[in-house]
Amino acid sequence: MKIKFCGAAKTVTGSCYYIEACNRKFLIDCGMFQGSKEELNRVEFPFNPKDLDFIILTHAHIDHSGRIPLLIKKGFRGSIYCTSATSELVNIMLKDSAHIQEKEALWENKKRLRKGLETVEPLYKMEDAERVEEYIYPLSYGKIERIDENISFILKDAGHLLGSSIVLLKVRENGRTKTITFTGDLGNFNIPIIRDYEYIDETDYLIIESTYGNREHEEGKESKDLYNIIIDTIDRGGNVIIPSFAVGRTQEILYLLNYYIDIEKRKKFKNVEIYLDSPLGVQATEIFEKHKECYDEEALKLLNNDIDPINFDNLNIIKTSDESMALNEKKGVVIISSSGMCEAGRIKHHLKHNIWREEASIVFVGYQAEGTLGRKILDGAKEVSIFGEKMVVKAKIHSIQGLSGHADVNGILNWVKNIKNGIKECIFITHGEIEAQESLKYNLKSISKADIIIPDMYEEYNI
Ligand SMILES: [Zn+2]
Image (cartoon, rainbow, N blue to C red):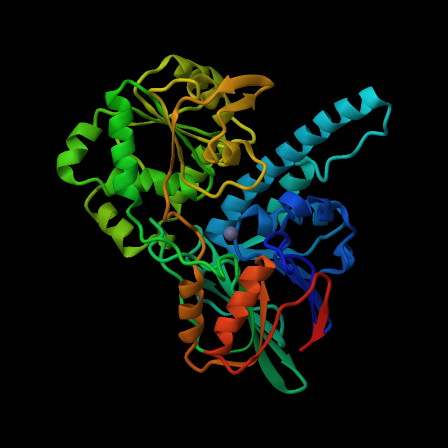
């Protein structure tokens, strides 16, 4: 069998593995390249999408799913297998992504026309994203799914995002069955709402992520910090603006706001108006509400006590843009909005109305990539430009540490150490910057006898 690394090789984004085995051709994930690798989205796939039999999708994040509409645009007509929660999340995320692609192309073309240049097509359109649903087969965790007599797979909980999974692929070739395990993204311990990752018993080959392969997360005291910032800000009459990724992080923040505060503090907190102003975030929250089969013990315990972990009396859901605009007049409220790095969406309006107020607070709860508006604010810029208008930064800027969707180096090594019968043949390290990969390789050598490879983009192996 053949495996080709078509993304997330010596980089974090664009996860895509192409496999040929037993006369089948298929993918594990087909993600979008982001940030500095973005131009790779426009490079031809090193396989013909029409020839693919199926895709197994580890989870809904765009860097794992974002090029699926492009595959459909280019003739893919096979099945897409993933968990039930992933099938719903990926549906809203890909439509959102298509919307962004169309909008960006429109902007780009306006500029190009003014310069007399040729216009560009969006990477894909809404109609391509809408078709993804037709090909999706939602599955449960832990069941053996048979493609045919030679190929089967099982999805295990990866503890990273609602519905996220580790894929255990079994291929029978020349009378021998080999297991190839794809970790997808491995979750951090104790992510609110969802369960921690599951372990596996054994594997011949392991394709493992390494996002934080050289970093240790700080111990979490995030809920206390968040609470104190909110109370202090509201006491001085300011608004708390929380830029948050719509899917996953937003629901974690709702959970923290609802649950971790002790009963005494809760009394004061009950009068605080909290607004969720993110259309995608609202849709995602509804999907989280629906998929209680993914909840961990703590969240289930709340449910048993009639407490909805991600909904509470003082949470207000914003639906229309008029309602969103009405928030401009509010004082002493909490606004959770997207995008998480402040590059697009309604968050930019809320920043425009609050960033220059010294009584306001901006609270970052997620990673801010280099070059984004969020990163500039977080790095202490005295002045930023929002919608072309220069604004002075007077609001207090906070960053809540400890909220990460990814396992850190200890979390990754712990997962590998717990593979009961070990890894027999080889480990491929993917989904990380090269420093993180090298560091993880060094650490893995001390706990596994398997060969360890850091594959290059488009590199191919016979296994
Ligand atoms: Zn992910």
